[in-house]
Image 1 (cartoon, rainbow, N blue to C red):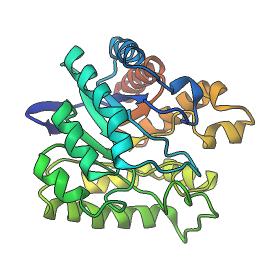
Image 2 (tube, rainbow, N blue to C red):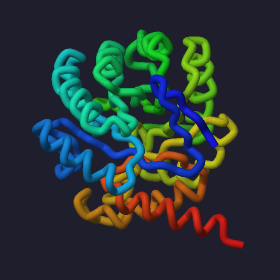
Image 3 (cartoon, one colour):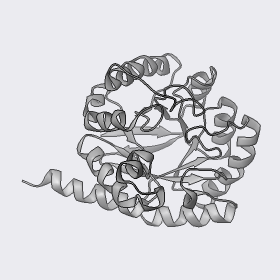
Image 4 (tube, rainbow, N blue to C red):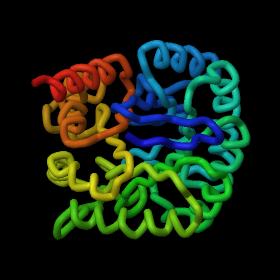
Length: 277
């Protein structure tokens, strides 16, 4: 069991939970996830919460391979009104901001977010860890090799699991030194990894339990699924459920997904399966 202090509210994870993805972007890799208005975001948030999402992750820029970076000011302009509206309309939701910019994280928490989800694990803004430490909110530390612009340019590892584990050992200590009390780790499926790397990380996910931190798995509709199956992201829901199930069996505590209902069902079935005598 893990307990996270989310800006004064306690999030207890005694069984896996679901984080729903709210992309306020024009270019996310999965077209159906793109939201254009605050009304769109509120409707999607309501559906996700009714389907069983515990957390909502709100992002303002795509981090798909070869995506173009936008400025912190542009990102803030996109996400802050959404975070404020979602937090106001659904006060029971645990809202996360998906950003690697420290100023956006600070403004987002002021607008109602209570977690910070950083795809760079503190490597793309030198002020991020100190900012989160001062905010006193949980921090999702993800591993990435390179940046979204360069990460899929022939990524090579001697042993991907060992490299990612070493990264987390170092970065969680940096988080501690910056007074970040609650850290969630995310191996970063698809972020500077080949399909083979992603499957190795999924197979060896339980290794990260030694860090004694909640483990987030974000495989939803990604290329590892649709490229392996020869389909598109739009047709990758079944494959997503399969990999989410494997992640749960190997120790995932949080599933970050586009499709909440199916993820909640996977959690419930795996829970019964693991408790069966």
